[in-house]
Image (tube, rainbow, N blue to C red; front, side, top):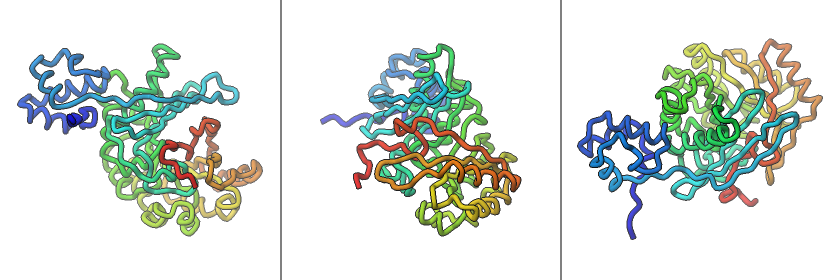
Length: 359
């Protein structure tokens, strides 16, 4: 049985430079190969016509090229919208699968991408957590999701492209920081056929403090969103036990204050309202106290129904009272509409059924 050659798409630009050196080639060849892979979506080394035949031959016997494959897609038309939310299922070269979502609204086309197969944090309200953790995605697999979604946009609207990217899909992006950052550099700063300002890219985290500190010092211009969901440590441990215990709220607050001081940009605090759990006036007061120590805005979202996970969304009147208290306390508050709930594409709903917990 012939062993499968390593997938060259999994290599970072730095790793490509090392690979070129081992092949006796100058380092600038790595930039050319990288551009062919990620700007031109080359599926064969023969396509890389700026490379010599000899180099193409060396590459073809050393590496393979395997892009992620879209094997399923669903769409859901939202109220008062002509643009459906689309969810795609991608099969990776090792037969693992991930989901990604395209959300089109009000002139924006947002790609929601995954960073891991599954997630190790297993938050109790999130379908991805029921999968357990399989592995990190490579930088190439992360960008592959964006390119697949962008092709869908261009097919419907020639000349149109993705306008925003959010790392809010499957997995915890800051547990895969190296590959997430490498993917962002490819998508934002290398002047490829797709290039988007880092200011249009949001990284969402449950609060991985060391990596928040790293981002703050990195000079990157991406936005940061923190999935908080309660400002009560005991409640947070009941909802998000692994994340809350490892990154307690008092330490998280300090790291966010440092982040906003370094970057000068606000953090988005994402707060999913769960009926009877985190929606009281006391919960709102705790959120105000937590949020006053750093520059932020609050994003309230509703719980989206997930099979076998027993939570309930709040009543409209409860949400309005909660929002009003935050607003009257001087916080910037928005209510985020959920898209794609009917196709399990909304916040917390992504999970490839292959590994979903049947219990």
